[in-house]
Amino acid sequence: MNTNYASVIDRVKSTTIDTLLLIACFYLLSDILNSMNNVSESLRILLFICILMYEPIFISLNGTFGNHKNSIRVRQNKDTTKKLNFFQSLLRYFLKISLGWISLIFILMNQKGRALHDIISGSIMIKVDD
Figure (cartoon, helix red, strand yellow):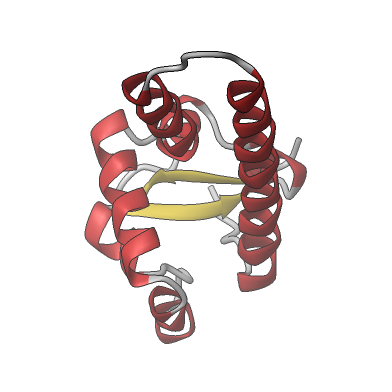
């Protein structure tokens, strides 16, 4: 089986779509909570964390909205037919947001186009036929 790897452009477009989606969710949730009386800080924090978990949860299921729009998926590097488990996805997400754009430099340095957060978490971005 010949695997097609996701391009940097596909990855950036996917991340941009997901980021805009999260910003919209944060804005909407903030607006809703501000219109309500006596919303506890712990509930606000819990909802904030739930929104932040969007990417790790959806990557472990089958991809984010941005992934689907760009026909790319995150898979295990050793077997591209297998999805990441939640903990791999969480590690990948933490590294991705911690390393930022620096992680993407590694895409240009390896044949499979893996970012630093992909290398450390054992993942790979592939192109799929929808």
